[in-house]
Amino acid sequence: MNPLRYLLFPWWLAELATGAKAFSDNPLIGSPTLNRWGLHVGRVRLAAALARSRRGRLSALVSAEERAAFERDGFVMKRDFLPPEEFARLRAEALAYRGPAREMVQGDTITRRMALDPTALEAMPRVRALVHGAKWRGLMRYVGSFDSEPIGYIQTILSHVNDREPDPQTALHADTFHATVKAFYFLTDVAEDEGPFVYVPGSHRMTPRRLGWEKERSIRARDGLDRLSSRGSLRIGQEELAGLGLPAPKAFAVPANTLVVADTSGFHARGPSVRPSIRVEIWTYGRRNPFLPWTGLDLLSLPGIAERRANWMWAARDRFRAWLGQPWRDAGLKSPATPATQDAGG
Image 1 (spheres, rainbow, N blue to C red):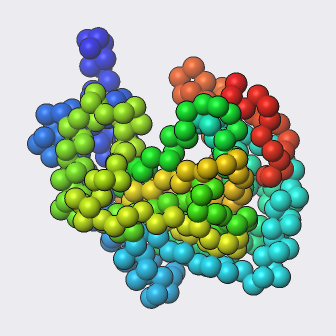
Image 2: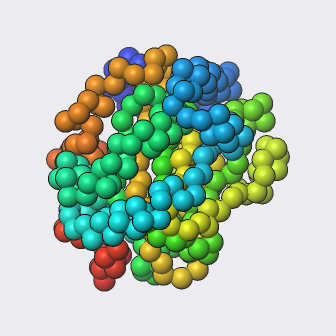
């Protein structure tokens, strides 16, 4: 290590009190010795305890049935989320929208996102009413454990767009070491063999066996695992689940108008697709510093700021590409179901 890097020690130390997760970037977070002594597991335990406390204070936002489903499974699924006529109008509105899009290629799959920014929400009043509605907001806040506004997109998954290796998102993984929320409101039917969302029920709970697995992985994550695990998104093989007392993954092969809200610190993936397919959804996510004891006080949730964050993040990556990287290329004006372009592998 370059001795000058030790000047960063105060920064590395401060990151321990945040959601920083990359074993490969922070020598303290990635230290095999410190993780043998329990650093990573200690952060996991504390973050989980604080999430339970915050959810307790947000419990009135969801029904008793929804709370029970989440505690059991780590997700809440709501079929027929909107009345059929209302959903048909919302779906037509969303699929007809044409606006700025960004795309990321991972293996043989493109993920397309169109930010739900002020312009998009003005053009799609039914989508705006959906994501600003009490039921949507309540589930996002309870599962995410914060009274914060999520970032929203219309997201499209286009499978088998080139001849590259399989999509890396098809490997079971946890997004990070602490509670974080993602919502999937499917605008198209999802078949079991066409890239469904997959989740391991109950894997959001930090049981003794899960904590033991986290410790073992944290000791090897910096140098001895795959690249994405070293970045803090730990991968797990399906054959390992039984040893953690977990069931087989559940694939959400569901009709359109189904909402799934999940804590993606649980193990999840994108199911494989056996043919070219398109999955379109309204997709929102939320993630804050897991060590905050309070539920609110989020300046980024203020009106005028919350709905602009997606574009600001893309612009920051464009400007500081050399330091931050920028996997999201500007794809121009598109509609959600626009087919993939021929240069998808470029």
